[in-house]
Image (tube, rainbow, N blue to C red; front, side):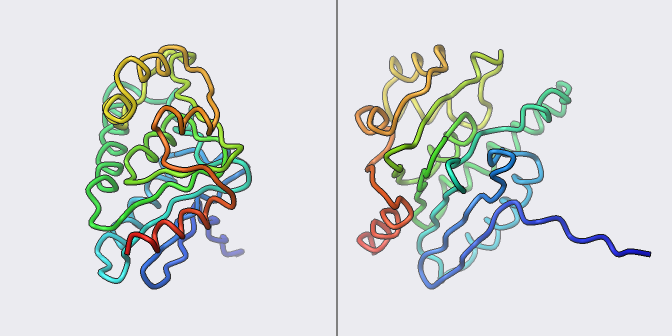
Length: 202
């Protein structure tokens, strides 16, 4: 009988002194925040948030994608009860990032969409690659985010601009995101930029 191989990790963690880099590593699926990915992230955060040696957690993606948000195929299978459970899971998970003792930085290396933006919004600091693209595309799909973005985005960039981005679902650039106040800096390589910020804050 052939032994089944373990599924490849959906994210990786480089746990180094002071700074830990968490990289979402499913580019073939556009780094979607599937239930499996969220479950892995939950377990990893439980470990990191309780590690006194970790001072900064940097989140980044792979290739040209930071995070593309929830897995739409999974969403289509949810009923009312499971949809509420899924929303609550994401809210709790992202709130744990927002409440973290550690400094949290989103190093946005590419497309940052929907729930991916919600995760970035939960971080203390957001930096982006020059070519990064942003959107909250739920309005085009007849849905709205349930992971805290509707609360955090208006607090960060103002109600009027946030409503425009939610309602139009339009994509915008890193330069626009910097102008809006959504991100704190733009530069490449973005992980190095985030690491430098982490060092300057210690």
